[in-house]
Image 1 (cartoon, helix red, strand yellow):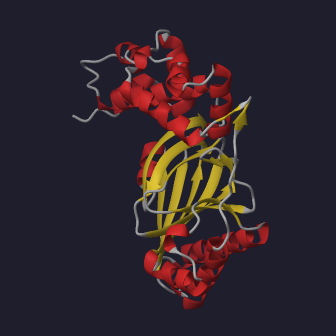
Image 2 (image 1 turned 120 degrees about the vertical axis):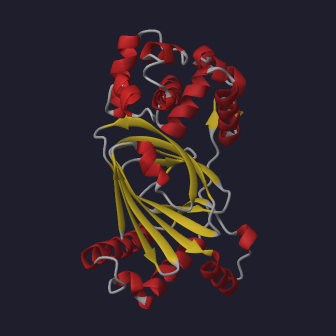
Length: 312
């Protein structure tokens, strides 16, 4: 079993398999991000723990199905709350946004398509109609799956990378597929979001907002611009952001700009650039406040990022 420990969130998400991801730290309790990776024969299993809140956008790139199972921490997927009786089923190219608002833990289980197809055939389920997204399967089923996967991780951590642990047990793999079959036959969770007298397609609104974030200079981008781009009121925008990410539009935009500034700080030459010049590129004019907020979010001062990460 491979165990990775990171002080930086970006290094952490780079170790997450089967997914193409972009992510942001939304709050930090401790700069500690851990991920355990284990191959279960045909399956792939990862357990992770995060030292704070995070907002991650991604999609499955492996040929199969991925189950995401939160263990600790309040979690939202595309604005839907992940309750204790739910799992997330990811399809290839199925895009999602998952947010945790505090310290958290989760499990990812990847099942290749050749292991999934017999379940479709057995139950007469069309592969195209198979549910994706958040699926409620009952607390008993979720607890059964969590217990099984955590037991596999614990056993193989003790025996090392040999196949003497539960990972190499054919009966265990059959039990995983039996639990997955229960999950696969459940309908996805559906929600209709109403705000005032109008109904809004939350995913469509978020796409408009993402397009705005990527197309306009960040030093001139404000919350009002996001509302205009999405064609909603400021009140509606706030409601959607709280539902989708667990943070306000202002907090989200600030975090987004800080991550963009961090990337420039990491790539800049400290002999040719200054923190104040870089911060101003993203609309931060009060540099003392910027440095304090930056440290709260990343666990280090921006000057440390500039000096320590420059690649000579």
